[in-house]
Amino acid sequence: KNQVEQSPQSLIILEGKNCTLQCNYTVSPFSNLRWYKQDTGRGPVSLTIMTFSENTKSNGRYTATLDADTKQSSLHITASQLSDSASYICVVSPFSGGYNKLIFGAGTRLAVHP
Amino acid sequence: DTGVSQNPRHKITKRGQNVTFRCDPISEHNRLYWYRQTLGQGPEFLTYFQNEAQLEKSRLLSDRFSAERPKGSFSTLEIQRTEQGDSAMYLCASSLFRVGQLSGYTFGSGTRLTVV
Image (cartoon, rainbow over all chains, first blue to last red; front, side, top):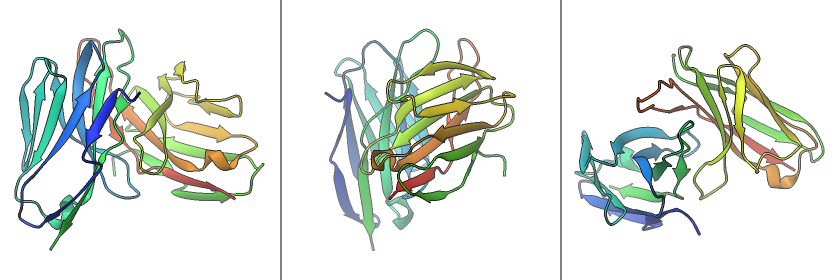
């Protein structure tokens, strides 16, 4: 079973609309949770990083929330733009002492249409 | 460009051939990671280095795979006797690890391998 589950698998929205992507995880205990944006054929780019004690983190039009009790996170995109079309990946790092292993979700593929 | 650089961007090879990929990390980063990503999935960890030392290898890294970071700077990932199942995007990332601090990871654009 995947330790990081994302929903929906894919999403289509119109330019200018808002959307929210979900991430549920079972990794425990965990150190931090990250959201990445990955354009087709490119490497992931970091959007937000939250430690287990943080509830929300914003980066421009991107706002991530974290509920460590329910092991859920969300990424809210405001006033979407065509350039937001990409895969959005939720990544959780467990406490591991040394290497902060990154456990990736499968991503949500977002398409923003004009 | 001070990001993570990967070469080549694309590689098509025949089954059974050997291939080698190169990753040049951000110069001040002491950790370097290799990941493999297949279509519709998130990246999967393969191995990582701190400076020149390879500290962890995933079970995904079979005997046909070998990675090096000889001088603690660039790294190479070699796949011997390639199989069709090796077709994937191979991503490299680097980070500056400091004890007690949260590290940001910078990814390269990847090398897409197609084994025919």
